[in-house]
Image 1 (cartoon, helix red, strand yellow):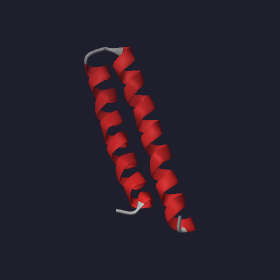
Image 2: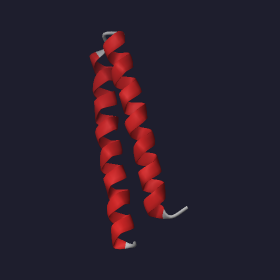
Image 3: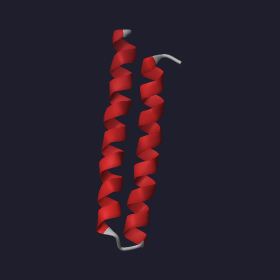
Amino acid sequence: MKPSTKDQAEGTFHKVKGAVKEAAGKLSDDPKLEAEGVDEKIAGKVQQKIGQVEKVLGS
């Protein structure tokens, strides 16, 4: 698997995982878990964009 594709796939995984953590934090009224979910979701978006940029640049 190309590094750019791998970054995009991992980014998507982290976005989904972050969304699940955020929802679980809201349901269980756990602000720490909710914040972890938001952070992971943002990190996933960044990683996904890095993969897209690498794909465009051909790195």
